[in-house]
Structures are given as structure tokens and as C-alpha cells.
Image 1 (cartoon, rainbow, N blue to C red):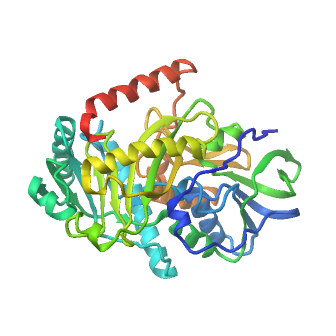
Image 2 (tube, rainbow, N blue to C red; image 1 turned 90 degrees about the horizontal axis):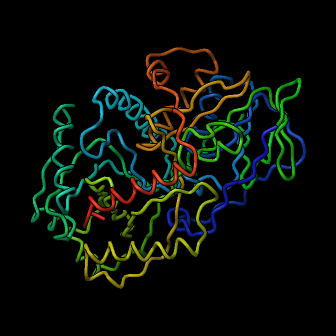
Image 3 (cartoon, one colour; image 1 turned 90 degrees about the vertical axis):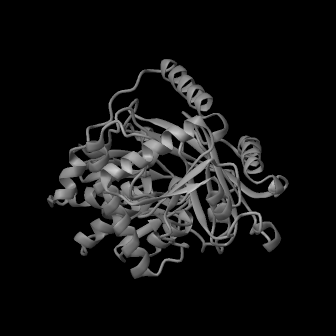
Length: 436
């Protein structure tokens, strides 16, 4: 019986969540519940799977169990880019990029449809994204990004140094590239809205960590601190915490990424940010900072990543990392050097060695799904719906694309893995130079 030794518990301040209206009290699982299918994990994969299963089986009962609040887990802690396409520099293989784009575009279209139909207030913006280059590494990669977009037939516009200064108010970047197709959102608001609009045959339980499960004659018995779920089928969609249930052990690397968010900027401060209009910028370099000016005029900064084989970093460590965010903000806008951050937080992503996936039936009636590294939100939205269709023996061209992705390969054991990650991180930081 898999027993979870670690459960998701964040002690920092997720700005996307904290700036929303206060959420209603969570429904915590207690007593015994009987359902046809239970889904563990209320991130984008779990919510998308639950939604599609409930559509396909309207007479069945489902439950979605989340250890945190939906919107305060990893899917509500990212930078809020709903990507249709992304690559730092030249992709290793253009055919793999094209394959992934089919999933990203399908996921983006699904999210756009749901946000519109359900009127989810998540500051959805279709204004696209910038890539910024500040030094030699960024210059090299931004040219490679342009070449990739040309090969894919995707439109973009160049912004020289002066045009970047006019648009976002900083001379930090030597060049910029703007392209469209993606969306920008408050990811915590998006996740709340998606969960709130799940079909009525899905019961949602939050602040309910799963302690373990075991197989019984009827299916599965799932244990939480105050309750038990009996389910015919079980879906594990716990993100980087999948390993706690014996899935993907040694097949993916949990990496922490970190962000900070200011209070709404005054009109006087906004004058330093070019047009003062909302934007999202990704570093052309793999180690470059991600910057956003949100619709409510907050400045968002994300950089730094590290290996987090255990629990997420606590608030004290995240506060220390926020000093690096301040340094990055001051390098771009010296006049904002003393602008305080209201919130700083981290989130955990899963990276695989071979762009491989965890998707499918791992034991009779036991299914698992993991979205990884690039474009996790749009990929997760697509993959969750496809897992539901896979469970119901439905076929489609898009499911064939998903099934063509190789399984995540085995990683080197620790401590060799730790050394390899540290060396790769040091190399990326070195070559990125001032992009950070």
C-alpha cells in the first residue's frame, strides 16, 4: 500500500492567490464516501480529467481530492503564461516541437472556451508575449527563437533597444521579440474558476491530503486524516508528488521556481514602465528572468530554480530568494529599486530527461498523469481530457499524439543526479550572465 510521507504544504505567500477575494471555506473529506472514480490532485491535470470524465459519465459519481486549496498548488503558482508554443533557442527536434504544439494549442483552445463559457474572471489576455535579450546568450537564443518561428510559419515582430524602452520602460534589453497566440492569466483565479464549474457529479474536497491507498476487491480504499473513499477506479494527478504514491520514482526531477509580486503601482511609478500597459516577458536565455506587468498594475518577477527532492521551501528561504528578485527588478528599473514586494512564493515543477511523460494505466484501474516542464498548463489541460477519453476507450487523432510521447526515462541515481543538476544550473547561470 503506497503511503505518502510528504504532502503538499506551502507556508509562503502566493501572490496570485492572496490578491483574490477570500475563498469560501474548503469542504474537507470526512466519513466514508463511495464513488466510481476518485482523482487525487486538484491541479490542472486533475481538474481537466475530472471535468471530462464527468461529461462522459453523467450518471457516475466522482470525487476530486486536493491536499491544498485548488489554485494555491503548483498550477496556481506559475507565471500565468498559457503557451501555445515555446522554446529557449533552437529546439532539439522540430518534429517533437510540432507534436507538442498540437497538445499545447488544444489545451489553450479548451481553456479559452471554458473561460469564456463559464465567465471565469482570471484577467485573461490574448496580447501575446515578449522575449527579451540582454547579453550575448540572450542575443544568440533570440535569433534562434526567430528562426524557429520562421520555420513554423508563426508571425512575430522585432523590437529594438529603443522600442523595448518605449514599450516597457527599460533599456536593460538590447532587443526584444513579440509573438502572439498565447494567453496571460492569474493562474490561481483560473484554477478556482475551473474547479467551481466542474459538473455536479464531481464532489471536490480541499485541505484533504491523501495519506495512502490500498487495493481491495471492489477497487481502492483511499485514506485521509478524517475520511475514507471507496472507488472502482483511481487517478493519480498529484504532480511532482506522484512519487509519494510509487509512480514515476526516479523518472522526473522536481524543481522549485520562485516569484515575487508588488502591490499595485502608483501612476507615478507606472510612468517608469513605458506605456504602463500589461505585458508578459520571457527571457530568451534559458536562465533569463520572467517579468510581467499585470492588469491590476503589479510587477511580477520570477527567476532562480533549484532541485527540491523534499517538501517545498519554507517562507524564510523564499524570502531570501526574493532578494534576488529585487536585484533583477532594480537592474531593469533602477527607480523601482525600493519598491516593496507584497508576496513571494515558490512552486514545484517536474522535469523529465527525454521530454517523456507519465500517462496511462499503471495497474488495473489505477491511472496516472503528469504534465512536465514546458507549457505545463496548456499541456495539462489537453492531457487531462485525453486521459479521461483513454479511460473510456475513446479514440482520436489528438490522443494518438499523446500516446506517441515516450515514457519518462530513468534518471541517474542520487547523489549523481544532484551533482548533474548542480553543474547544469551553474553552467546556465554562467552563460546567461546579465540575463538573470
